[in-house]
Length: 205
Image (cartoon, rainbow, N blue to C red; front, side):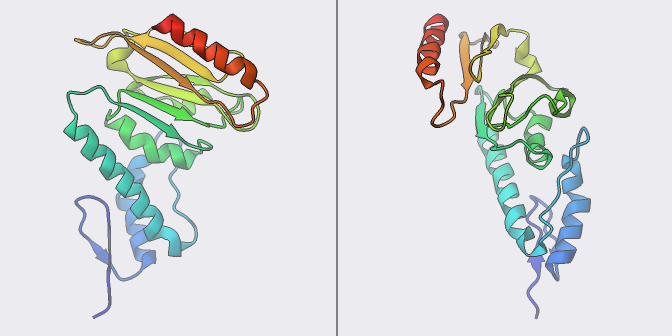
């Protein structure tokens, strides 16, 4: 009996004779759900790599869902270094935004600039704040769930450094201070970055 390849999407259970038919099934039956706001999710053109790439994505999704389901009453903050927020990578995290699994989602090293339309990275359930570097690399983006965004205060998007800071007060909670920042290695502005960050922390305490 020939070995069949299982679809690793949670709850699917189907098996296929080869990678090509598994790829077709996955794209049509599952990954289309991640195509939002003009973004696309494209599997590696080398079909030999499809099972590995797909498994990594599904394992990530499964872990996030397990964690958030076990902490439904908790305030959940997620920080992710995207190392270039391509359409494909953004599509891979859309399920967390669609299902509102995260209260505050911080993305570092977005690598975005003025040529990237803000509308491509908006979500109806979140408010989005963005601080691009303006040149290659870097960048910070923050998603704040709408249900708590109305308590957001003291929003500051630094001009000199890649820093976004704010405070908020969710229902039945103390004030929460958030600083999302990215400092590239060997940065020329290191001398000013840390004193600036220290001053910001002192103001928010």
